[in-house]
Image (cartoon, rainbow, N blue to C red; front, side):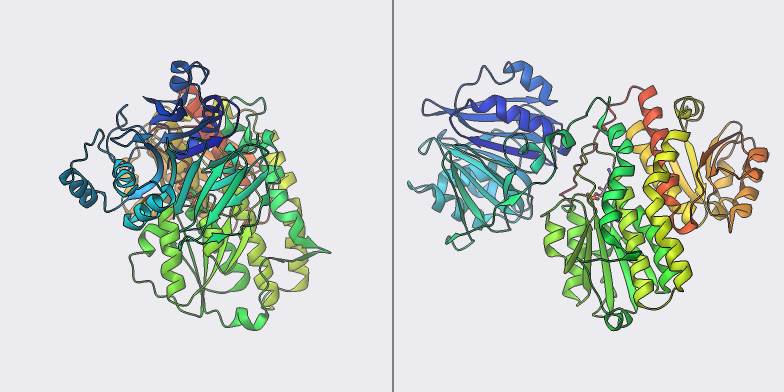
Length: 607
Ligand code: M6R
C-alpha cells in the first residue's frame, strides 16, 4: 500500500519522481504528491486522484525546479483521499518533508502529545506525526532527529525525508515496509519497489528493518539501528526495463496473462535436472521430511487459493496432511504448529502484512518455514527459513495472474520433490509427472491460443452475478476464478464446492443465472455434471470448463471452454487461464480500470 520514491543528483528531480511514481501506482492510487528542495525551501505539489493529474498540474514535473526530491502515491488508510491528506507532509517550520508507506499504530497518542506541544496538524494522517516529531527532535543533526523519531514510532514504515539544512541529502529508514536503494553514478535513489529504479540503475541495496540511510548524489551510507555504519551488499537486478512496461498490450493484466507460459517455464525449467526435481534452494533429507507430520499452507487472496490447489497435489503425491489457512485467520488462532510442522508461506509481493504476521507466529512455535515468493529480497523471503522464488518477473496489475500460476508451479515441484524423497511415488509415475511439468508452459500457451472466442463468451456471461462451481482441484480453481471476476469487473461472483449447492445455494438459481462449472477433475467430473444438470433444470445458463476431448459436457452445458488435457493434479495451472481472460474481457466490456481496480492496491502491507 502506497509507493514512495526519492532522487538526489544533478538532474531535475520532479520528472524522475513522477516517472518513478508512475511505476509504483499499482501500490495505491488515491492521491499523489512530490516535494523538492529548491533555493533552500521545500516546494510541494500534491493532488487527490491519479498521478496523471499530478503530471498535468506540474507539466510532467517541468514546472517544479530542484534536483533533490521525494514522491508518494497513496492508498488511503487514515483520512480520506483528499489533497490535504496526500503526502508529502511538511513540518510547521518548513524544514522537513516526509513521505511514508506503512501505518503508525500509536499515532493518536503522538498526535495528542504534539498538539499539546503546540504543533499544528494540517491532515488526518498518521504520517503527519512523523514530520512534527522530526522538528521536535532536530537540533542541527538530521540523523539523530530521524533516529529519535523512529524510536517513538510503533507500526510499519518506510520513510523518505528531506531537510532544507542539508539540501542535497535524502534520509530513509525502514521498519516492516519495503525499501530499496538505487545506486547510480553521481545520483542515487530510493523506492518501495525495484520497478521504479530499473530504468536508472540495476544496482540496488535492500534495506533491512531498523536500518537508516543517507543518500547524497555521490554517496549512499547505511547505518544499523544503533547508528553504526554498516556495509551492505549491492545486488544486481536481473530483469529489464521492458519487463515492467506494457509492451504493446492495452493492460498490464493482459500482458501478464500472456507471459504465463514463459513465467511458468522460468519457475520450472531451472529446477529440473536430468529428469529429476532439484530444489537447490531447499534441500531436505528424507529423514528431515519424515519428521514432518503436517504441512500448513498460509497466505492471503489468490496466494491462498494457490495454496488450496497445492494442497491437493501435496496430499495426493506425498500423503502428508495439509492444512490451508488464511494468514489473517491463522495469525490470531493460536496455531497448532510445532517443530514437526512445515509451513509454506505463499506471497507474490512478499510484503503482505497478515502473511508476515502468520509466518512469525509459526516460526515462534518452532515450525520450519518455506517461503514461496516472487519479489526478491522481500520481507517474507528474508524471514523464511528457506525460500523458493517463483521467478514470475515484475507483476504490475493489481489482479495477480502469472504470480498465481508460478506459485502453482512451485507447489507442484515441491509436491513431486517431497514425494520422491519420501519414497511415496513409483519411478514410472514420477517420470510421467516430471514430463507433465516440463510440458506445462507449452500447454498454457495452447490454452491461450485455443480460447480466442472468450471476449464473446464473457459478453454473454457477465451481465449479472455469477456462480463458480467445482469439486476438489476444480473447486480451488473456481475460488480463484470468482475472485478474479469480482476484483476487476466488480460483478458479484461466488464460488461453491459443487456438492454444497444442494445445501442452500441452489435456492438462488433462477432463469438465466450464469453458472461457471469447472469440470477438469475427471475422477469426479460426473458428479459435477449432475450438479450442472440440477442447476440447468432450474433455469441456469451454464458455461463449463473441461478438457478438450470431453464430449459429455457438450451435451449438458450451454457453452464450453476447452483446455488441453493435463494430469489432474496440475490442471489448475491451465484451467485458471480462461477464467483470468473471462474476468479480463468482462471488465473490459464494462469499461473498468482493469490494472487499478477501485479500492484495491497490489501489495496489502496493512492489516
Ligand atoms: O502479494 P501477495 O501474494 O501476498 O498478495 C496476496 C493477495 O493480496 C493477492 O493475491 C490479492 O488477492 C490479489 N489482488 C488477487 O488478484
